[in-house]
Length: 466
Image (tube, rainbow, N blue to C red):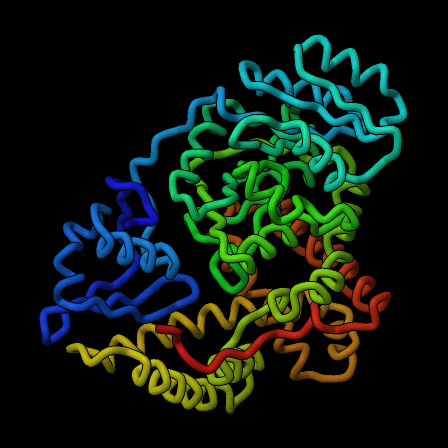
């Protein structure tokens, strides 16, 4: 008996190394987080041109292990019938945004949940014009509560949650729901890209279009804490209706971070969550600097409560001790930095080597993986200094030349990341700094109110999982 349907096909990612073992098997090195996986000769025989096609219990197990390790992605998924999908749109005023949202959803069954708008007549008129179903709440429950109210009225097997300031067309949502062909997948999300129709958008709007914090990169992923993608924004999601009801839907008592909480609860319950960046939804950018930065600050305040509910999953960085030491040494930029970083890199590469299978060139591979890990550590430590810990960094810069050097190094690293991932303009670099300051402020406010620093503490790991 198989879990995945017959014919379901997964393809090993191009960035995963396939290494033949002496006994005729295969070792796979890669994934997110980085891992080593060994296939026996019999299992390796089912990998053809980097693909595994499910047809029996053996291929089902191989495909599931590859997907769970983020070593492979599903391919050739068929979209669901749009008649099996209902969109739930929470709305609180902003009828002009809702109008654009419903226009994009034309042809799909839509439930609009008016979350106690100040001008309900305007919302009613927009809903009537687009022939959607209106559900009016007498008290404001927040986005989570509004989505749950809409979910309770859904009768189709699949539900799409689309915020009123998001444009998502039915074809894309039906394709996204195709991820649920894997019966373990409960939730899936597309790339959410910043959007504006303005001919001459303001500098901060251009930044949000180029580098929205809701855009989670170009790498498809099984979403979980510690993976390349650790959460999904609720701006646009597709889910299995029955599964969401089983876990209680969104947390009604959360006004921020409810999307992160839902993803992590689903993962903790044994379900799979997928991110598919080849599919896109457009998110209307905020129209004022105050609204833009205010939203970033609010996002940050949710970190402490997420830490209380989910423990180390909220860690702002996941580092190995050796790579953390090497990264800190490089950022310090002192005379001892190069030998200290080299020593940490050698130590780290030996630790990686012990976790790798006995394959030709293992030592060189371990060194390359450790070097890649060092780059990731540099990136995470730079984010800690500039984003999560910036109030402490600011004070420490006044007292320590070394911290000033580390902060300058972090700025260089973060700028290099910006050049790699976005279309860099002065607005982009300024926007990154203000985004970090606003989010970090919210993070510290939340931590202070809750009297818990868990959302500020990195997590240390000591070995590559197998």
